[in-house]
Image 1 (cartoon, rainbow, N blue to C red):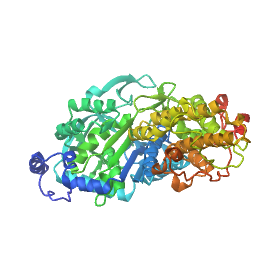
Image 2: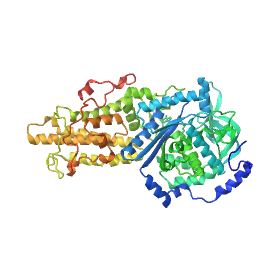
Image 3: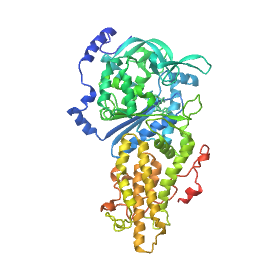
Image 4: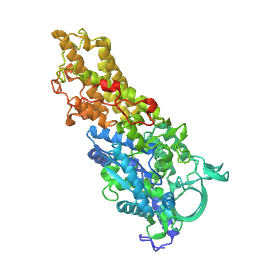
Length: 596
Ligand code: ME8
């Protein structure tokens, strides 16, 4: 065994004693450091930085709907922060090491790297087809990542937090996870043979006994509890925070962080011991640091890191990862945003059940924006959601095609807006004190839309995107009601007073649409772009700071008044036929064509 470190010539036991002493000295936890004066200066400097990640996905199989969902959630938060003027970094990528990938490559008859490159490309293709605007796409087989992992390992080793031990227990290759006996149950495989499975995932487990390197996870139990208790927002939503607290009150044994090279060749060798391969989860989690520039350029981003993950990998992110980071002397993530799962027919998607939803195919069927809107509008982080094509078609028809598209079409149709401009607002027709032609419901609508950006902001911040979309949808309905109530098409345009009122009605409606289009950019970038371009809103006028709803009503100038509308008068979002949604691509129906 060769150890390149300071303690290479000492026996493992000696190394452990020395470091244990060092480790047990009372060091304030890192999240307390964060509030110190030195760090708050750093935070001030970085407070416009934002760093969001998705899990890196296993390349043992093609991407499915759940992978796209995580990516769309993170993309939405990234785009929202950019609109707010943040310097945002957004990382996604693929997890390419480990036994599961080694076996998948063998089964495909390919060498592992060729196999990984092929599937990693599929993920990248899916993400670009769905406008996932990542700023970094990481593969764990890259050299920059290997260097980061080796460095990270050596920091833990030098601190005496890794020791050579013997691991005996259950292992699930499918989950790449070690399990306690209490987490394992009996089941029958497809041939009726008795097997042991993970109670949580249902995947088969096997007994293993190996000489491994162990990480002193048990030493971090109380620090992790303190961190979670002192930071109630660290894991969101609340139910997942509670789940982690509960786990931490149970036994927390040390964690095996390597496998024998004879069993696992496809991975990063333990530095100084090429008989052992680094455990794939330690390798994978470090990807977040690699992208941030670890080991020497990560500070700007690492202070503001937040992870979007599915509930299946909570333990790895909310227990193992923070413990590794504490061990390495690095700050902990600001937030771990957890989401639940998409099911099909109430069941987990799986190849064997044949119910896997192909996200690329669906994004071609319903458009990229359509899938993004559906996933974010229907996906509730707290609980699982069931997917059907019919639901997608119905939702998109109701909210994007009819409600939003219909409103835009009505207010920009040449019959109502022959000059094709953003018309003028008349303060006498719609006075701040009631008394003009406006009625009580109109004032209520203005109030709701005035407040909408703050409501949406609150929900985006908490990753309750479905609530933000519900709030926007309610307001779109209010604006449709406003137009319907005043029937501007029935007014006499030759009468000056009526003409001013029609212009005011349209001006207000376009202002509402401008707010919706701006707020929806993180969700449906293409549709928002189409909408805002039609309203004549220039790219530099689409930020959060530029929202400023109905400036004329506040007695200020409106930069859009009198401006020519954009020339693309096409359908905003084409209707879909719900019954045929399984087979056909969106096409213009009579109704949507009429919306022109
Ligand atoms: O776990 N519904 O990768 P993975 C919603 N490589 N989201 C789902 C989902 C579903 N049905 N199924 C999967 C791994 N996901 C590791 C991660 S990170 C350092 C390493 C999403 O390919 C969700 O985000 O199994 C889940 O956590 C992730 O995909 C698991 O992807």
